[in-house]
Image (tube, rainbow, N blue to C red; front, side, top):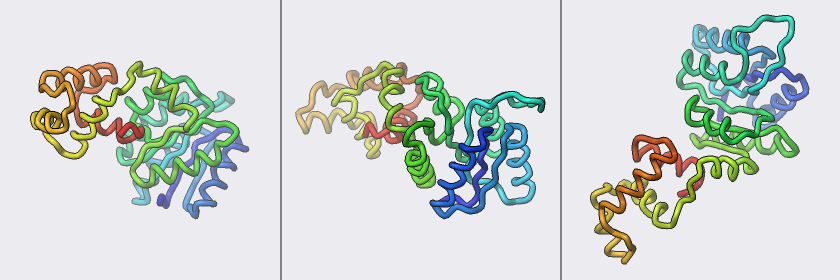
Amino acid sequence: MFKRVLIAEDHQSANISVQKTLADLGITGNEYTYYCDDALMHIKKSLMDDQPFDLLITDLSFEADHRTQQLAGGSELIGAAKAAHPGLKVIVFSAEHKANVIDELFKSTGINGYVRKGRHDAIDLKQAIEAVSEGKKFLSAGLRQSVKQKNSYEFTDFDITIISLLAQGKLQKDIPEYLQQKNIKPAGLSSIEKRLNLMKEILDFSKNEQLVAYCKDFGII
């Protein structure tokens, strides 16, 4: 479980709620801030003090006030935080529910979890923290379908079989023999290559390893 957590949240009630969730999990080494610039400063200072944060929990939207900020919001903070501390885990805790925004955060900024603020967000946040601490990715249940639809790809049984075999360590060139033994069609190497290339193209991946990791993270295999 995480030992040091930084909370970046400009609404006091939400900030307190996150702190309580951490306390319920026995995580007491946490700090909080209401500004993105301050959050980045805390992260850099923790590295200098050789006491780095394990996890950043941040909102995406921060209201402007009298203080001028270099980092306009959570997305910018995540990018800067990752640049300063590549090993930092990140969970976004936000009211944003647009599938394209959420999907891009996972793909481009490398977040580890996304919890949408709502009726059961304390439960979801607790589950997210536990999942991310175990090396998994987390996305609130209510958002999974919308993100899946955004990708515009429905995995077939054949797709799942191929990806599962790759996940088990089987080489792509050896999959046809396995499919033939199980009487699964099509079993040709060219058919397998076409399906893998199609999935990677639609999901914007360049390697089979990325496709396998994505399917593991989101429970497809």
